[in-house]
Amino acid sequence: MDRDFQIDSKLASEVRNYGNFDIKGCYACGSCTVICPLTGNSASFPRRCIRYVQLGLKEALKESLEPWLCYYCGDCSESCPRETEPGEAMMTLRRYLTAQYDWTGLSAKFYKSKLWEYMAIFLLSALVVVLAILFHGPIVTERVELNTFAPVELVHTFDMILLVTLSFFLLSNVFRMWWFTIVRNHVKVPLYLYITEVKTLIQHFVTQIQFRECSTKLRWIKHWLLTAGYVLMFTMIIVFLDWFQTDNIYPIYHPQRWLGYFATFVLVFFTVEILLSRFKKKEQIHRFSHHSDWIFPILLLLTALSGIAVHIFRYVGLPLATYYTYVLHLAIACPMLIVEVPFGKWSHLAYRPLAIYFHTIKQKAEQLQTHKEGDLQLVGSTE
Image (cartoon, rainbow, N blue to C red; front, side, top):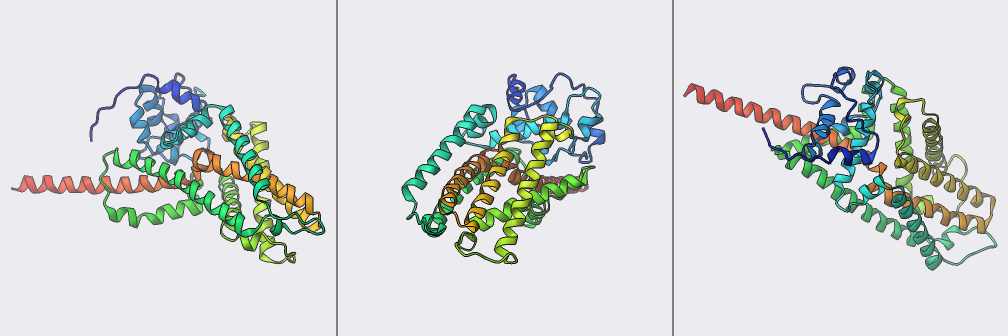
């Protein structure tokens, strides 16, 4: 369907607020499109979205899912004769689109201003400390009684409030993503396609299998393990808190310990590797670093390290050290979740599989529409 879009002359300068985007260097030679394994009849990666920015087609860009289909293998950037870094341009567009989906405007503030993000993290950390001071239980110093200091029922209630709040903001942003990319794109998707293609959503969320299209398969394994560690730890804390947070000293072979150790190991190991890679700037994906690229892994690493410290102090039998470190752990973890899940870098874990899901149902809906129009033309020609 041909559509008219209003040109926004400020789009290019607005996009550049979200990261590296060399609009003048690209001569549309097509080398990035040729080398990209995702290029197909309906997705000329990544030139189409770059062209949208060049022409000021803001609405067309907001309706596009293509930046989310890119997993930044870096092959296009390495092959670009003009060194315009198309892979990084797609990363910049993902940040821009995240801000467009967010109705609160906080994503835009956090991505465009270090001060906004740092202040949000600091204020939320301070709020957590204040809440701990006001609502903590008795401080037992003769032995470690973490569940007396921080009653599981109270912490679990706080967890549920946090989960509902984060879900509201993230899901409302997901609704806007669907509205921009499906509804405003004027794609008529039959209800059954939403249902039958749920398997695609689940598959890509669980396996992140599109990473296998990249030439470096090891990155897929690393990213999957890091995500698995995060999801495992999040599940144990939110769903099974009364089992995970306990004053009991379990043997090393108990699932509570080795599951926690696995999650902690992958979180620490791979976040350290990511930070070192960004510092060295050798891998193509880490040559350019936005401030948001540093904040999330640093907070994730600090959350894991403070959790390790709580565990050690509890097993050694240091009551005050355990309680204070526990509060510090919450003061790091809560701001990370509140800022990063609905508004920051974490949200790509939701947007990427959803984009593949929406892209799939759009393609199938368009094929159905084409077949329907062809059948109508055939009927009309025979009458």
